[in-house]
Image (cartoon, rainbow, N blue to C red; front, side, top):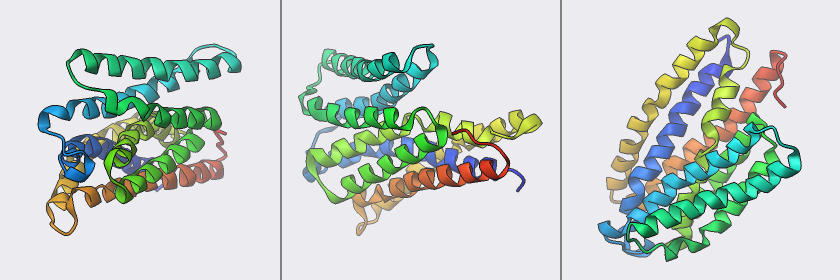
Length: 245
């Protein structure tokens, strides 16, 4: 294909939306297992709220780069903004009558994300590769541990996903010229992954020798592809005389 960054980017969007929805959809079932807290259905809401809230946290941090501020002020805001968002999520969940004390140490995961944002310097390929790698690491932790450590690892998948959409779009649409609008349309079509990946994971979880925890291996594949795509897309764009970084 003439534009490999687009064709590979379509699969990236498919898998990104898929893993995002899959974690949110299957997290509740994992939390019901004794080794992950044995929570009742009525006690799961704080974790689901924090997962989806993690997407908000990351996107708020990413929005800092939009403002015409010097680098020092941007770094300061990248520390302040995510914790404001974290406080809003914790406060709203607490006001709804849920116990959020189990989530108090989640700020450590947020600090890791802040460090990643600062290190990647708003470069789409580097950002996507780093956050894809963080997604892989968090999934590996979730697959090989139990209890709150595994739960935090899966929640941080939301932090990893938070910045992927704009990075993939930037890389996939670069160099398309007059075909940019059509390319964007193809990318939007691939949100179909959100309707396909979650039930696939659900079917895997129903297989007795796999189970709910190991079914999250599908996230490992999706996040791994993000890192792969970031590297390949950058090389493809460079071969076309384009370099974002």
